[in-house]
Image (cartoon, rainbow, N blue to C red):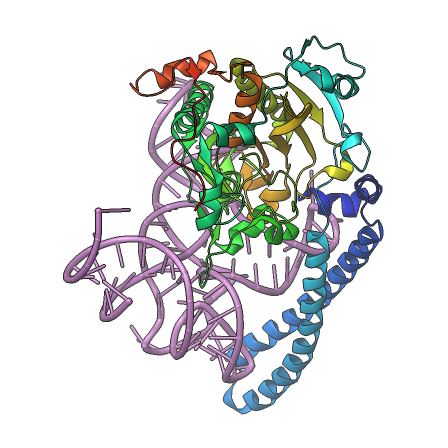
Length: 459
RNA sequence: GCCGGGGUCGCCUAGCCUGGUCCAGGGCGACGGGUUGCUAACCCGUUGGCCGAGGAGGCCGCCCGGGUUCAAAUCCCGGCCCCGGCGCCA
């Protein structure tokens, strides 16, 4: 049974609690309970009216011609009554469905309470961040309560945004001329880096049994509605004009929808996918933030982990997915911390979310580069993805789905540019990427050398 | 894009012309039970969703959405998808 409906009927207090910690309305739960009760009552009424009608209709089929007229007349009367009741049911049902679907996923007990970023709880730190003297105080604030080894330096690395423009590694000015703000032409060294990062993530995940997938980059509205909240539509989704198609914001969406309407056998679960795709995002709510560089852009490439599993296993998978992402970042050598996102900052679809935040030495703070969510049955209910003992056997319930970034190229590139930059401007390429670069004569192997922008600027 | 064929309860398929006997028949698979020294074969039952107490009973369900009718898998309209042929294209 869908967990929201289950709690609604069996443990409404849990739902109220979940709403409360999210800072959402508790009355919504009461309203849902009332609507559900009314819906069930109407449902029973209509079922019995329909039964009467069915009995009558089969009587007509067998009746001698002389009696038919009267029976048909009675059936017509019954039909009018039924039609009226059905209209009432339809409106109650639509409202019930609307209210039920507007309830966000039920928050897991281990999620910290809180409303804002400050309430997120760091759960562990990794690496030895390089901290510019001017950021020291801010840094210590961010690692408070944890023992983190760090190195204080006297020079401040150049921020990635200035760095890429100064050294001809990206051209956002010309991109804005042809496509607008938050687009980029990525050049030479960064192109190699992007491709190597994708290969690195796919290599790592395929060894762990993930099936590689390049999904459709566009989705119809119906499947998309199964995987994101209504608010997300306006905020991040691009629509193809004149068609029922939307550009994906992440491979999570087409992969989640991939098994829509299916009942998966227990023994084929978990299904592990590693998707690669471009991601298109409007970034509607982000005016003025990260306007320069390639940290927050309308289009980037991402390798995404996605899991379909049974409800018993999903919390264990949640931990594994974040560990996989950590392994990738450890391999690269980028210092990070993992934070448990507080209830008020959780997205609608997630029951719990970890972010992996990389250390950005030029900015003096940890910033999100990976997001890892257990969405439990929020998506699978909407997409009707269930599981059963065997294919063809009756469904036992809805599967759980989870998703986690493996590598989002632009974010990881910015982290590399800031963490491995030397005072002379040279950026050291993480050793793990070497084997993916080695096959190309022109690709940088150990260093990305600073150089003046190739073409003169301005138009 | 055009012409033709088609979408049926996990898979395959019957029914659709000629609306009611279809609360959709059969085969395969799966699950439970029986028979058998074991396996195989065979026999019986179960195998979509919802309401209800996981009872009795009932409602809905034949790609989706409308319509005609007392009654629609079956007739009509609109949409989506799949297959074949032609066109176009990397």
